[in-house]
Image 1 (cartoon, rainbow, N blue to C red):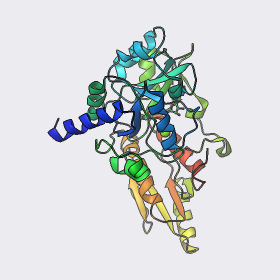
Image 2 (cartoon, rainbow, N blue to C red; image 1 turned 45 degrees about the horizontal axis):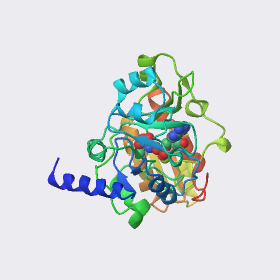
Image 3 (cartoon, protein in one colour; image 1 turned 180 degrees about the horizontal axis):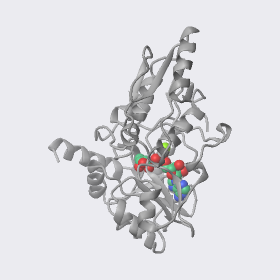
Length: 326
Ligand code: TXA
Ligand code: MG
């Protein structure tokens, strides 16, 4: 660790002990972190994000030993998954212990726990000693941040201390698995896939919301750009781009592999992990470009693309809405 980083971590620990909120790099996306044991500090996260108080936060811990502190009872499945995937992009929902304030869980009887795989986050967690409650560091309903600059864009002086851990490696939020009832269930797909989890603990269910396209009206408007957005296969996208351009509409394209000739916008790699890594930064850039319509090329089907499809569907459902869309 450089002297500069050591100084940043010391400053972050001091801020957290004072009950302040900081910007936290993780391998998935940046978080907005506060002392999970301090209800008042946790309240500041909700105020900054504009998030309804009944939406629970994830508690980040520095090592799997934290499972016994923050959860009630003993879950052999959780221990197996922690051994296999932590530190890493997997959040487990478990019955909560008395150490978890109501403010963190919105009064629910369960808590989400995750040990992140980012070196700065781990150093901070170990120096701080406690758990850090942290949602993604975006205003409610908007695109998650994958760089320190994105967090500053979102909150400015509202969050003066943002630990700069560079670009997030994974780029989309963690896989969430609910282990609080009999049947383990994936609530949010992510880099760690259903097949990887099943290889460790046997069959798990996949939440309908997570696995199959829903009617757009029922989609939670999340991860949304403010520019209206259409998700189309390549050929349809090229036609749409030509037609809209003929009408004089300012459009941007988010393509797979390479941009169509004459289209302007960005292209992301035709590889699910590399695509996820670049997705939110690309959406932010295109959204900031003052275009009237965003045309996004639909990635291929297949289990490795599931998490990307989930985020794109949600983005398309929420795009162009008001900032306070649900
Ligand atoms: O990768 C991630 O998970 C990032 C980084 C910062 O760790 N965090 C993140 O947090 O995405 P957030 O709050 O933006 O998304 C967490 C999701 C929310 O949809 C929340 O409702 C759900 O997890 N969640 C948290 N605790 C829960 C619980 N006890 N039961 C059910 N869902 C829960
Ligand atoms: Mg979020």
